[in-house]
Image (tube, rainbow, N blue to C red):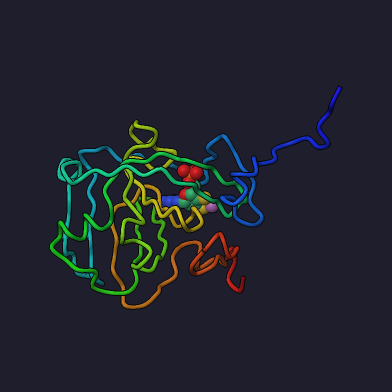
Length: 201
Ligand SMILES: Nc1nc2c(c(=O)[nH]1)N[C@H]1C(S)=C(S)[C@@H](COP(=O)(O)O)O[C@H]1N2
Ligand SMILES: [Mo]
């Protein structure tokens, strides 16, 4: 009888090049939140786009739902070392939000802000060109509160802490201003392929 020479999760060779250094695959969907889960009723939800302190766009839930809806299936990578392949999301591309506000990207950086007080910074170049969305659905169903519902940012090519749950706005900033985890020792950019986990990596 032939036995395998190892036990445990070993990715199929065709998947190995999709797993960044130091990461392991998970089939589950772990929940990671710095604090309690906020519950935001849809009738109280809104999303605001700002340039610095100045609001330049605001959508209530029904208005947001009327924007172009995009599906994307992506691999996600958490700094706590799990990766999950082929996660299917639906939402509004950041490109479509900016266009609906009648803007061109006005500054090089942005901060995502959330209902729990969380924030995270991302260069605008990483949010546009179809790379990021404000996701409202996962696997075709409304996003659960634990995973950031009603809506979360999805920036799948960066570590998952950049994908702000319970998002209520994007603020364009002139400078790269560190958010919640970036102020607490995490990397300012967070590229999983370069293992940018902590400041100094
Ligand atoms: N608003 C908010 N967004 C957040 C967080 C948080 O605490 N608050 N945690 C971040 C971290 S560290 C991770 S790894 C992912 C986890 O998302 P999940 O719980 O859907 O797996 O959300 C990110 N977005
Ligand atoms: Mo995380």
